[in-house]
Length: 341
Image (cartoon, rainbow, N blue to C red):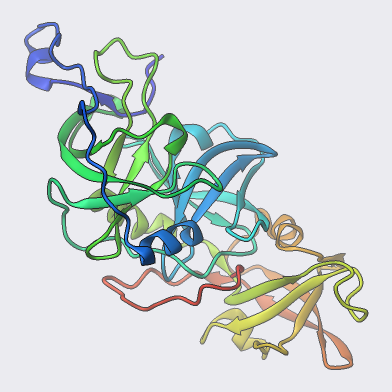
C-alpha cells in the first residue's frame, strides 16, 4: 500500500519508464560546517517540542509564533493513539491534529489545554541555495547547522508532483524528523524536515528533505486550523506540593487574551493571577489534566472552571470560542516563559 510520505523522483525519467539510476543522493564528501549564531543556538531549543504516542517518542515539532500550534511530520503521528507534546520545560499536554497536508506529509497540532508561548514565524520569502540554517535533531541535543543545498521534486500522496523541497547539507539523521529548519539571517522558519521512505523502490527516496515555507504557511493559515476551540488563557503549572495553598497543584493564569473566553468571564492573569484548580468538577493538577477534560469539546460548548483568587474560590463558566487565525507576517516577539493557552 502506497504511503503518503513524499518520495524522491526524477519525474521525467519515471514518465518515460526509465530507471532513475542516477537519482541517488549522497552527502557532500566534506559537509560545510556553519557556525550557528548564539541567538539561534539559544532560541531553537525553546521553540522545539517532542511529540509522543503515550510515552513513546515519535518526532520533533516546531512551535509557531502567535498561535502556539506545532508543525511536525504527518507519518509518525497519524497512527498515534495517545498523542502528546512535551514542551521545552518538560511539561506534557494531550494534543490533537487540527490540519494536515497528506501529499507533503506535514501535520499541524495543538495542545488540548495549553501551548508554549515562544515560537518561530514562518518565513514570508523563499530561501536561497547556500542560505545558512540550523535545526534541533533530538531532545536535549545540540543545534545542528548546515545550508540549503538544492531543490528536489517529489511524488507525494495521490501521485501528486511536489516541487521545490529543500535538500539540506549535511543531510540530517533520521532522528531529525519533524524538526523545524531555522534561517539564520531572518530568524524565521524556512522548512520542516520530513522522514525518508525506507520502503520505496525509487532510488534516493530514503533521504530526509525539508518541506518549503510556502507549504507550511498554507497549512498554518488553513480554515480547518482556525476552527478549534479556544480558552484564551496562558497558564503556568503549579507543581503539587510547591505551595501550601495549592497542595495538589493547579494552573496559574499568567495572561488573558483580549476578547477571548477567559476575558469575557473576567479571569485575571499575571504573577498573582487566578489559579484554576478544577474544571467541570474534575481536579486540575496540570495542563494534561485540563487537556483530558477538554478532549472532544466543540466551539460554542461550555466548561466550568473552579478558580481561586486571593482567599476566595468560585466557579466561572466559559464558552469555548474559535481560535483566532494567525496574523500574516506578524513580527511580534512572544514571551519565552509559560506554556498554556
